[in-house]
Length: 243
Ligand SMILES: [Zn+2]
Image (cartoon, rainbow, N blue to C red):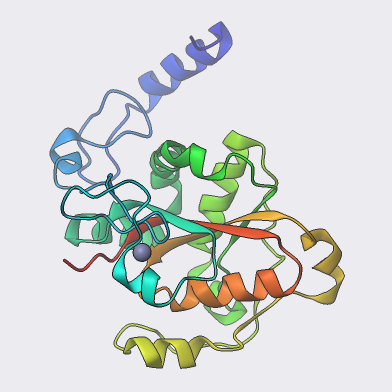
């Protein structure tokens, strides 16, 4: 149960600012929760899933199965997990989170990330996929770093938001093919030399909002491993899953 002081603070907050769903604006039971009508439109990534990339299988499979794509080209990371399937409902949440309002959705995502705590319980550092500084100036905040800070606040795993840098401003990945995305992202990330020692032998949780083709996540993982990280686990809000 919540300590008395926190309970009083929470009751006071609810009186002054009644909790509303960040998506529908409807009154909800507590801050950081989603209106049930919106919740029911979301699809959470669930078992059975590919033990490597976290893709949800549409049918029952044997335990420890890997999907065809991971079998053909094993990803450089140890494993990846996503909270939601990327679809219209999750895309609307992420768009809001990314462009207009990082604060009201952070408590929701913080709780949801903790559903995957088994996936990262031995991690040493949380690292967000970085934005290039021009994009950061335009957007004002890096949504992946907001997630990283939120996860760090609840797990006490240190958040190293500036360790991985985006050195090249890459055009949007939006309409590109998988091969074009890989080319586009090549050599776009680096770890400044002064951080190499910090990274050495560390188990990393790499955080991003959407796992699309995996090109960005693969490239970030390669750079982290190249500079001494011992292991990378990936956590994203949503994953594009083609049936
Ligand atoms: Zn897979």
